[in-house]
Image (cartoon, rainbow, N blue to C red):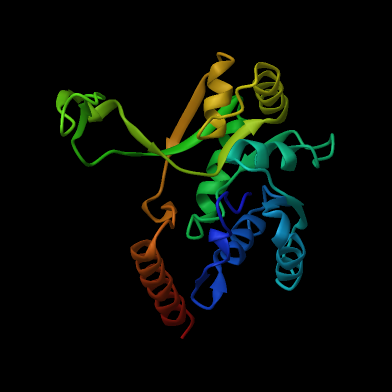
Length: 230
């Protein structure tokens, strides 16, 4: 799991805790997860390690210094895993509300025989393809994409360990460690990437409005939990 390049976004607080605390707790609560490796900015490694130790999670936790990009950070995390790990789940720390059931579903799909698995949700908005020309003052629509075949991809993304290792080795050898997600590297090798149904609450917290929405979701969850416990 990575904190993200360009600043420790996942150290922003949500409901009194950093996003990374919520995400680490949800991963560790899955029976499929035995080890959580966090790729943190180099200056925050010690701080993040202390934070995660204080959570007393039901999984082994390791914190490593991440790289300048997503792929570099994931590669560094992969290199710390023992040889006994045969399934790898890669999760964005900035998706703190991902249900544990989605983690389990991705893991189960990999163990059922798929090389790579991603969660995806149907695209609700109409998607337009636009021109990419400096000659026009504004982009011009050149086509409308069939949204019925589109999915917005979430995390965790799951992989057979050997497949993900091979994808990263090939990317490093080619000098093209620049994919926006790990499934993209696996696709380059010609492996099929299966899609399981995603979850609306697995959205990525990227700005102030996302934090407001995430806080509202957590408040609703807490109210529902308190109501069921009374």
